[in-house]
Image 1 (tube, one colour):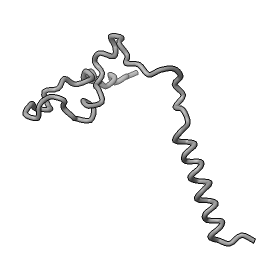
Image 2 (image 1 turned 180 degrees about the horizontal axis):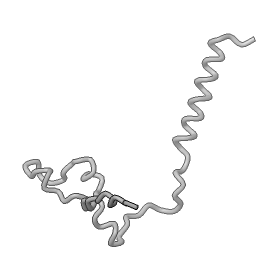
Image 3 (image 1 turned 90 degrees about the vertical axis):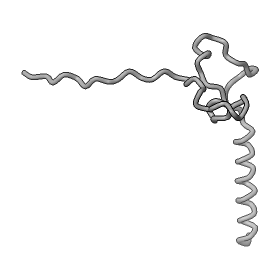
Length: 83
C-alpha cells in the first residue's frame, strides 16, 4: 500500500512533468521568426515602447514618444425613433 508521502511525491513529479511539457510545447507558429515590414506594421509599438523603456538617453522625456495607435472617433448615440 502506498503511503501519503509517496502519493504526494508522485503527484508532484507528475505535475512537474506536465508543466515542463506545456512549457516546451510549440506555440503553433511554424517556420522562422521574422519582423513584419508591411505598412500596417510601421505604426505598431515596439516592445521597449510598450514597456515604457526608452533606448534614448535618460534626460529625454518618455512622453515624447509617438503613440502606437490613433484615437478612436467619438461615438454618437443613435437618434431617438418616434413612431
